[in-house]
Length: 382
Ligand SMILES: Cc1ncc(COP(=O)(O)O)c(C=O)c1O
Image (tube, rainbow, N blue to C red):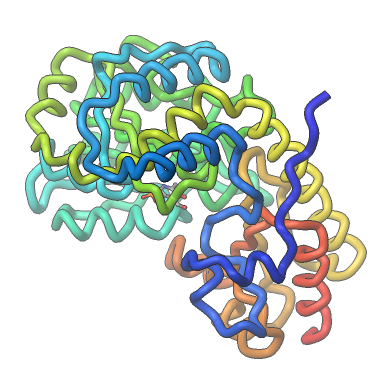
């Protein structure tokens, strides 16, 4: 039977040098940055240890075993086996998306996102000087979905590229196969390229619910590019390695025209660790999902018993809870108030969309103790 993977103790976590644990003074409980508080997978640790033992700390060159490992992982997880000759490496998902945009579009071209959405997607579009077009998700009681009619209207107005967050951070939803098929059909009809950011895909609770964009139809293969990384699901963000995946000859050719330096700018440690993650760490991932599943339900229990006016929909993937705290009377910057008054750091909803200042994002990729402590801090100020 799979054993749950449990988070490290708080005093161990406070010794970490990552941004999550360095960004705030030591009396703050930090639950914003999307890192998890678990020990890394044993196979990942062993692969990195082996590198260190041999002082193997040079540049990253060709690394076909990573493509092979991802392709087989994807087949096991989602029954979709990408063509390994159509995978390229980038430093991280952010660099991958920015570089793909630099290759495929020019300044001023229209790029779509769907708010509320991961804050850096907004920044990547302005970094390449594209024109941002926001088509908000349709929402009903925190059930969000793509607004396909509004998307089609904007596609018809000349969108060049659409960044899909699949699954969608921070609202916790996974697109249905039929939504993705429809997007692919529309994109082909209006000449739009779909960049599907699938970094959270492996953290889907019900594996069968997640569809890699390129797996849904022939249209999707023609118009789509997936950007993904082991960094979120295996907690390897500091190791800098992501994958760009195509399935059409035309997009492959375009992606291959990107500078070879793209691979050189990624990290050998990232490629080695990601290979171990994808090829030898399924059990660890399942163990993490056991804990995260308990935690997503614990949040519901704590809200129901302590602060029932907070609105929360249990997310379908990952470790991010999207909480509507408008009932708490914390003004226009609830996350700022919570940080100041309770020393609990959460992400402000406004980061994800201009109309979402009444939300906070809570990272529950941690221990039951830390989640309980966070709610105790919250309750005290109300
Ligand atoms: C949807 C999404 N994409 C990308 C990233 C960042 O990925 P990377 O560190 O590989 O740039 C995150 C991080 O939280 C994310 O949530």
